[in-house]
Image (cartoon, rainbow, N blue to C red; front, side, top):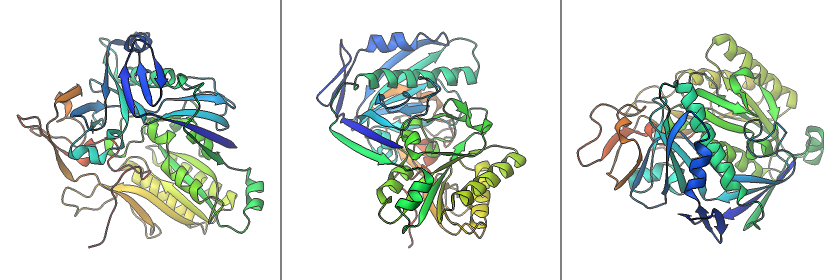
Amino acid sequence: MKLELGNIEITDIQFSNESRVKGSTLYVNKKEIENLILEDEHIKEVKIDIAKPGESTRITPVKDVVEPRVKVSGDGGVFPGVISKDETVGTGRTNVLKGAAVVTTGKIVGFQEGIIDMSGKGAQYTPFSQTYNLVLSCEKADDIKAHTYERAVRMAGLKTATYLGELARDIEPDNIESYETLPLMKSKEEFKGLPSVAYVQMLQSQGLLHDTYVYGVDAKQIIPTLIYPTEIMDGAIISGNCVSACDKNTTYHHQNNCVVHDLYKRHGKDINFIGVIITNENVYLADKERASNWTAKLADFLGVDGVVVSQEGFGNPDTDLIMNCKKIEEKGIDTVIITDEYAGRDGASQSLADADEKANAVITGGNANELITLPPMDKIIGHIDYVNKIAGGFEGNMTEDGSITVELQAIIGATNELGFNKLTAREY
């Protein structure tokens, strides 16, 4: 499969009477977005704001972040199985409003939602302090349940990103990036002198607002399977979960999966990146055993020399991570795992809930329990009264001047387990 990403660089976002992209500015008709979102009877009101890098703005509680894109050529459309028909994506050309993002917020759905600061100390920990954000604050209709509210807000973000992406359909990109993965046997022949590497992406699928969707299917209903890397880059996987903000993979993270991007950078040079195994993180032991058995079997079937495994979440999924690592290693395949840590605020506790001596090549995204004090902001988008209830918050954590003390796990993307962050470990 070959996919081209046509990047249209966005360096500003403004409200306007007409939605369009002119130069590097994204202009948005607020009323058209409101009408689009309010088509859903489960949302009774929406407030639309703009948040730009460097502004004294705090967004909370954040639910998802989505990058606006449009399929220009090739099979399928954006967010297949959800927004567009369930056709296989990953080919042709997709135009991207690079630098723009749709951020969803509103009253809390589940306690594992997060914070984006556009400036100050907190901005250093989230990539979305550097994007030009259209923020949707969605107020739910009365008496709807949490899962219905989550779906309504998720769809609001996806529909808005689709609307904005469509503005880029006929624009000539500033730059075009090309990615290609050959069918397995052709790839082995083409790069027969290079070690072959696969990527195992673990998808959050514990249920109760801990869901991820593959072509519209809840990942807890799948068995591990193979997928082209370009399918992931082209919107085949979207977020529907409210796991801790620091290591939640937003839809934006899936669209820009940096493990996939980094493996492609080395593809054909010192490795043969042959594809992706997607697997889930269910809660029952039998499901964990089944999924890890299949994951190891597929890695062995592909005949790879090495595997990179990324986790999503912590605690219960630590068991899935170690099972995957141990069983793949037992197939004689070198395995590297990417995770983060919950080592206590002093960093002295056990980092993962599970461990094995075969997990001896580990990349960490940092300690999510570390405390940080965020300075007051001039503007709050969303609802500030939940910062003591979200994961990483605590009673009395906000002072009268508006500063907030939280664990890093309250900041969207702070210890992301795709490595989409700036934290790691170092020796002293």
